[in-house]
Amino acid sequence: MTVAPGRYGVFARGTELSPELVATIERLGYGAVWLGGSPPADLEHAESLLAATDRLVVATGIVNMWASPAAEVATSYRRIAERYPDRFLLGVGIGHPEAVGQYRKPYATIVEYLDELDAGGVPVEGRALAALGPKVLAVARDRTAGAHPYLTTPTHTRGAREILGAGPLLAPEQKVVVDTDVERARAIGREKVRNPYLKLTNYRNNLLRTGFTEEDLDTASDALVDALAVHGDPATVAAGLTAHLDAGADHVCAQVLVGDPGDYIPALTSLAGALEL
Image 1 (cartoon, rainbow, N blue to C red):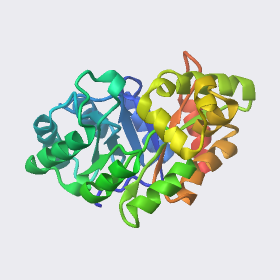
Image 2: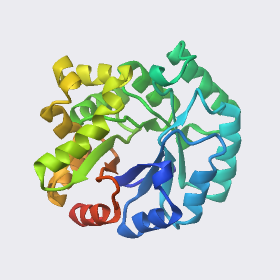
Image 3: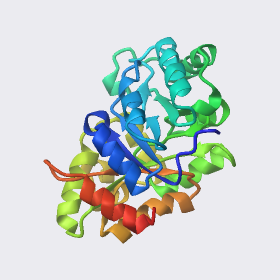
């Protein structure tokens, strides 16, 4: 692939990512920023973040296939790729059934959407697919640059690499709380994990496949929260991110969780130091 996001990146909702924050993320040494929250087909926010930086890769995590027509997305992709070559990765995905009334035949929809991106001139190496289960991971392997799993653990990463094989990008998201107060960190992590993800079928099914129990999911157990929102001092959190790389990931994007209201910069700064970016 021609887009090289480096080993570590930052994932955040689009509303949280200002050009100023992204410029700081670049200065700290992170290789990529992942624009969450189902950015619209015009991809204008992603382009504004590229304009505010010099080398940072900007990826969408993810453009929702139900909400953003492939032809429009392809037009936006070509515009951005021409202006910022090798710095934009189009992450696309099917989302979850609870949010989409017309959620039917998701696998067929994924394949058809990728077909439309092909027709619209989006190269395989310029796009990634949100993938959790084996069937969609295989599509990511065969039809895109690779997979961008969300709300997973190093155990899932290891299994995903086995399906992808060598070569395709594997870029999981990992929530982190840089805080040594265990109860406070767990409270922050539990709230972000429980609402809405533990209510959503695709994430629940994937966590059950990974080895968690229904009780873990229904209670947002400490073991579940500790795995999905790694917390502790910067070195501990850095080790939690690196565990994905050790399990076979090429890149891991940290979603830093803070109290509300919160400032992301101190956590991102201390974490960058621990990762030796």
